[in-house]
Image (cartoon, rainbow, N blue to C red; front, side):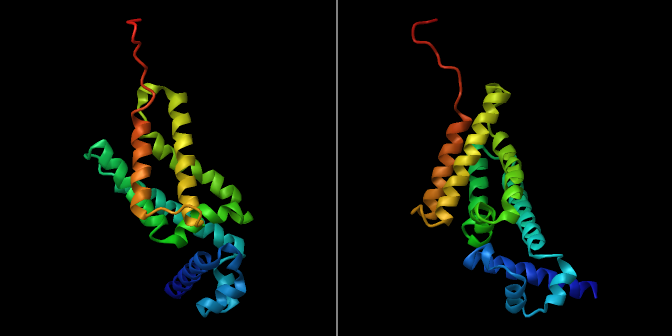
Length: 197
């Protein structure tokens, strides 16, 4: 029975993700989920108290998958540029190669009330990953400013692409994101005076 219940729960979440990929969170209702998954509302309420609870759990699951994928994608022994490219390629794989997950993570929180606060609370986890790439010599505040700005700009790039506003190839997105991250890791060094001061 536990296995059947877990299967039904997974089916409902997979179906919700499909619906979000096609028409956004607005398309996810108890009725639409049950119809598309072939399950009755009894099984829905056996697993979730309401539709918002399902969306929150699905968002948290995909956000955790993205975070874990970024952490494990970066080989510790690789050069700095290789580490950054591996992380960018992994995020692209998750959000662009599977636009359902990209839309859930980056697009839907802008209009779905159930995800608004959750999305804001998740951002620091990803900002912290960016922060780890910023040189410690720059100081705590400077590093935090750079990491926050980078996380925002990277998020805007993926959001614009997923929304259809940015016309760029997959490789162009990867190369550009790698460029701005590499530039950030090498920025902020004290400028040397040309007059010997």
